[in-house]
Length: 134
Image (tube, rainbow, N blue to C red; front, side, top):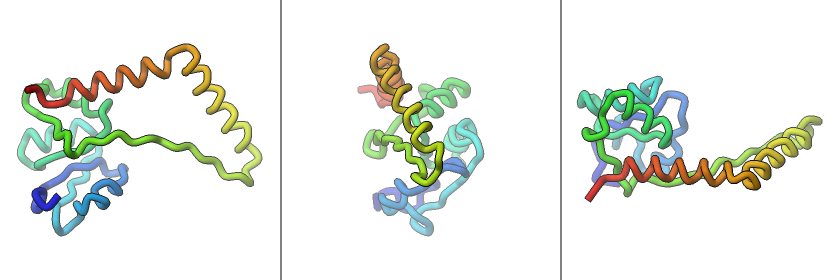
């Protein structure tokens, strides 16, 4: 990641930066720019205010489409990764068993109906659509 020394990196103001920190991409090595919206990230890169941006695929695809910037930006596969989400609830909360059961039931229904796999497939297709060609 030393190659990114001096880079201006966009990350939405409310989003965590643990992945940047794990990669050693912290200030003062880089400059972190914190715009409020995904479209703002892309505009910052397109306008030369930032060198790179990082966001989840759905927001990236939406912002790229909105700005009609599909041919102006490239994805860096070396910096891309898939992350999982984990849901937790506080054991002393009397609603925890109910909330956990509702989430588990919904995920089970999505898997049985095939909706889960459609979502994963669509997300991967969007992700692959952002990958550089050639």
